[in-house]
Length: 236
Image 1 (spheres, rainbow, N blue to C red):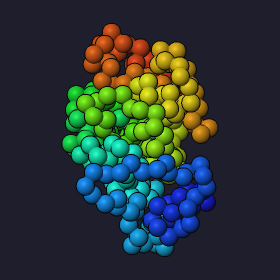
Image 2 (cartoon, helix red, strand yellow; image 1 turned 60 degrees about the vertical axis):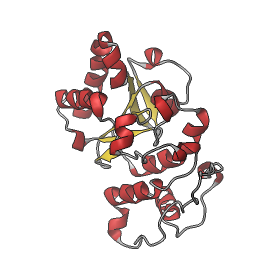
Image 3 (cartoon, one colour; image 1 turned 135 degrees about the vertical axis):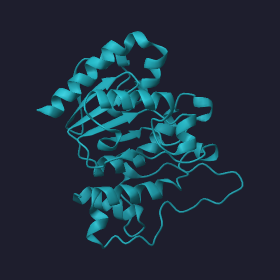
Image 4 (cartoon, helix red, strand yellow; image 1 turned 180 degrees about the vertical axis):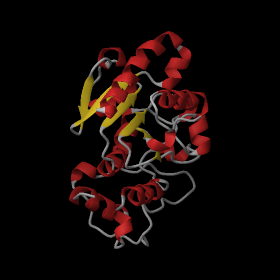
């Protein structure tokens, strides 16, 4: 873990001073009828070498995020959907926001969209356990509405923490909000597809979200081209 990641990790564990303003959290939305919990338990063993392993580090971040109240979605979620898979994976998949199934199960990309993603991964020779999967938003927006800008901004605290731990060879950005958030653009998915971009100096490919492909199956051929490009990069 590099120095910046360790500093963030220690702060989340409650044993380091607050980070610079870049990581400063926005004001927390008041929760109805319950006190605001701490952002992370203060009893973590951060002195152990195992605590700096990417798997252990991500587990610690997930526990801290499970208590998050940085935006009003804390009032309506069932649970935080942090991420799943191997934090040491060469491929990191970033989606948009949890839906109903994800909110209930606490895991990104489940239900019909998740099953399609699993099939796509299998087709390029990967299992779900061999990649890391996350969303730009960790809590489900009510009725699956689009994420609000302030929600995406609040969740940047956790996204940045995850990105400090992850060291992929390539990112796959699925859907409009994932692509626009990670690339800092307002361009539509259709204009971002077909080439590699960069996220933190790492190649990043944009493609349609599996949920969109279920609604628009004619786009599956184009999406397959995106995945083949990622497969080719991973095989180099």
